[in-house]
View 1 (cartoon, rainbow, N blue to C red):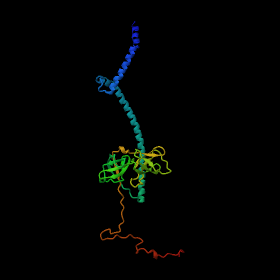
View 2: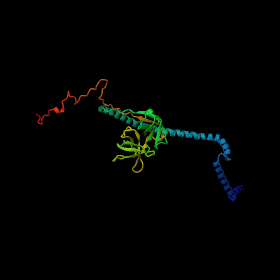
View 3: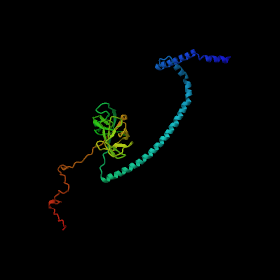
View 4: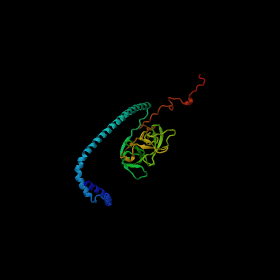
Length: 319
């Protein structure tokens, strides 16, 4: 009899009243969730949830301790695995860099010997001026920065401005204590560059985007992604060999350069102050007071040479 009674109660739940009550409860739950999401602090259930959370806090701390420990152990294993992989990569890079260092030292020694044999003058050592870059939203250029150094610190127009990993622009306007840097990404920037992998010349032109374009590439050369770009020094303003970036495709047959240094992320910069080459002028005047400079011996010395008109030319016969 008890079994039949329980079955009757369960079967009674399927009636229209039970279905209507279920729909009402669902709608009421949705309305409560909407009120709680719209204004959680003004919800009538806000204080109830706080009380429940405070009461369940000790139990949650006890239950979460094993899971927290497991997460820490997993993170430690993952970190050790990543560290070991990174150490292997750094060791491989270090071996490659050691080989390049030995090669660079050997080439430097060879170049020094060649310069000594040829009597080539030593290039002037650049003076590095450290400055802080300030964001500049105005002025005649779209992509420009202000630096807090000027003519009082030795800054002049045309000097190269570098970040820690590459060239970002050059000095355009100079004041006594400030200077404006024209970035490589500005539309007015044009820099002659050299593609080291193929030995070709080109022009790096800014277009107000994050990656300047590569134009006027030499004919007959094959440009590819990843080739290294440096300054060529052909403009007589920027020195040769300053790192700029790597070539990247820009769609079609166009190429752009991914800069090593991101100008918008640069805070401190280095300005290269290259000393001008001083030329000695030959002076024909008196070297000291009351003394005349001695003339250099040559054809014009009448005591040691004979005028060309008085030289006797032997006949072609040789007698």
